Image (cartoon, rainbow, N blue to C red; front, side, top):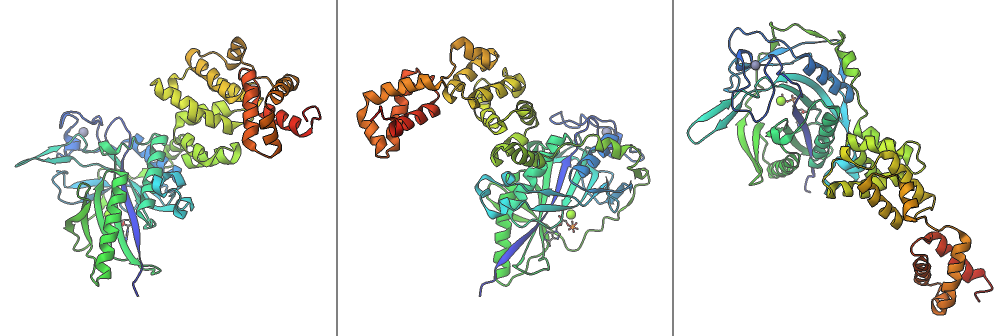
Length: 493
Ligand code: ADP
Ligand code: MG
Ligand code: ZN
C-alpha cells in the first residue's frame, strides 16, 4: 500500500520595522540611496562603539505583538548572536534569545487571504489560527552584491530594525503559507508598523518544511528554504519542495537537514549549505545594552496605537451590516476605503447597497478618472442619500447611475440633481395604471402569453410601460400592476 504523506511547515518572517532611524544608531533608514551613504561607525560595526536602542522600534514591535495576541513579558533583553559573516563585520548580530519582546499569539486565516484559485477549498473557510512562537527584535545585516569577479557590500540596510516573527510548525500546505503571509502583511501595513514592501526586501521569509506519513505525530526532518521575497514564490517553492521530499522518502531515502535556495526561474530548490549540527551562536546578553522593562510606558504607548484587525472588521461588516463576505473583505483590506464606507453606512438603512455602489460604481469612476479615494468628489453622506433614493423607489437603478455620474462630475447632492433633471421615478400607482392599461390594450398577444404563464411576456409589457413613461416608472411597481391587472381586472378580459 502506498503511504500518504503530509507536509509540516513553519515560517520565520523578517520584517523591517518602519522607523526614521536605525535600530542602534542615529543613521537614517532608506532605500535606493547610493551605497554606504547611510552609515556611521556604529552600523559599520567598528570596535568600541556603543549601541543606543531605538524606542520607536521597540514600541512598534510590542504593538505588533498586542495585535497578534502575543504575551508581552515585563522584562526582555538583547543578546549577541555570534557568527562569522562578511555582511556583519563586528561578527555578532544584536538579537534576542531567551527573553524576546513577544511570545505566543497567532494569525487567523480568512478565506480571501488564500490564493484566488484556492478560495473555494474547505481549507480556506476553516478559519484556522496559525500560532506564533515568538516575535523578537534585531538588527538587519548589510547587503552583498556579487559581480563577475568581485563582490560589493552596502551597509545602508545594516542596522535597520528587523522584527522576526516565528510560527509554530502549524502550517499544513503551501496555500496556508500563502494565506498566512498575506494576512500578516495586511496587518503590518494597516497597523503602520511596516511598509512590508516585498520588492524592497522589507518582508522576507525562511520556509521550514518537512513531510511525514499522514497521521504520524512526530515531525520528519526539515529543510529550510532561505530568503524568499514573494508570497507567490513561497507557495511555488513549498509545493516543489514538498513533492521533492515525498519522492525521496517514498523511494526509501532520507531527507538530510539542510538549507536550500529557491530558483523561481527554473522552479527548483537546491542545496545551499547542509546543517551538520545545530549552530552554536554562543548567545550571551549584550553587555552594552540594559534589559528593557516594557511596563515603563512602552506597553501603554503600544496599546494606544491598536487598530481593529482587518479580519475582525470584515466580520463586523458581514455580521452587523449585512455586507457580503467578499465585499466586506475588500472594504476591510483598505483603511481609507473602510473609513469612507463606515461614514457612508453610518445611520443608513441599507449598508449592503452602499457597499455595492461604493465597490462597483464609485471605485470604477475613480479608476477611470485616475483619482485617489481622498480626491473623491462624492461625499460619503451623498452616497448614502443616493442609495436611500433608490431604496425608497424614488429613482430606479438606471437613473441612479445617471445621477451618480453627475454627482461625480459636479459634486452636487443627489436630491438636487434628481430635482433639476426631473428624474423622479413615477411610483404613483394611478399614473402607472393608466400607462399599463394603454399597453395591455395595444398588445393582446403578449397579454395572452402572460395568462399562459410566460414570464418573458410580462417583462415585455413592463418594458413598454417604461418606454411610455420615458424610463421614469418604477419598474417593479409597473410589473406588479400589469400582472395584477391581467389576472384580476375584469376590464382587461
Ligand atoms: P532552527 O533551530 O533550525 O532554526 P527552530 O526550532 O528554531 O529551528 O524552528 C524554526 C522554524 O522551523 C519554526 O518556524 C518551526 O516551527 C519550524 N520547524 C521546526 N521543526 C520543523 C519540522 N520538523 N518541520 C517543519 N517545520 C519545522
Ligand atoms: Mg532558524
Ligand atoms: Zn549608523
